[in-house]
Image: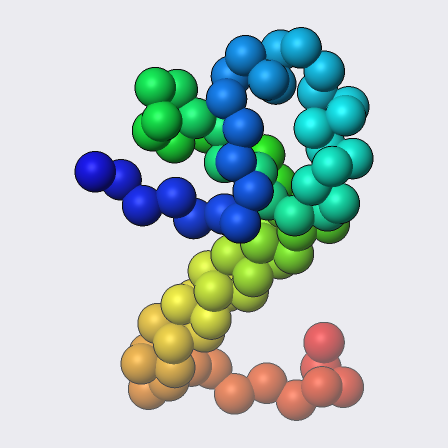
Length: 83
């Protein structure tokens, strides 16, 4: 059994019938799309998706920063005026 990670859910049939009404009814919440009562997809509002992408980007950048911090001994010191 899979966990449904949304407060709202709808069947694929409901989604096909009237996607706009479904989105309006969810009022900005994430919607789990179910097939035979199992989640097969999630509809995520654009703002939420953009925030998730920003968080993912920040996470990837933090991994790069941590890797570079471990290589601090190989760093070359440069003065700002020399750039």
